[in-house]
Length: 86
Image 1 (cartoon, one colour):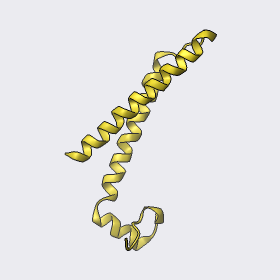
Image 2: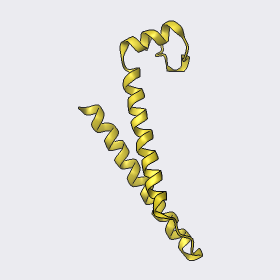
Image 3: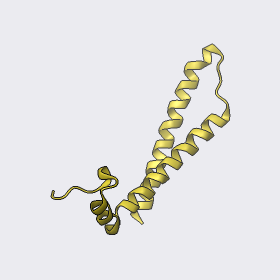
Image 4: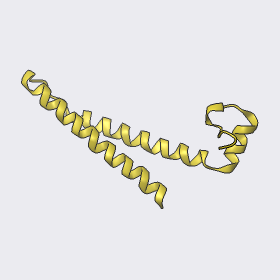
């Protein structure tokens, strides 16, 4: 399924970027003898994966035509309702 592979690819590339930035930060802090514990990497990567999964779930729910009709009818969350026209 294309949707599931796209969020996995997004998660993997974001994780690689995050780890690259964290390694650069660690190298910048090394002269000051400041070291990041291992749980920082695990926590940030877990948070990144959870946010990516949540975004994928919300996207799939909002793509259901019945949800679009409900959002248009009740206008509870106006910014989620699709715009009419173009």
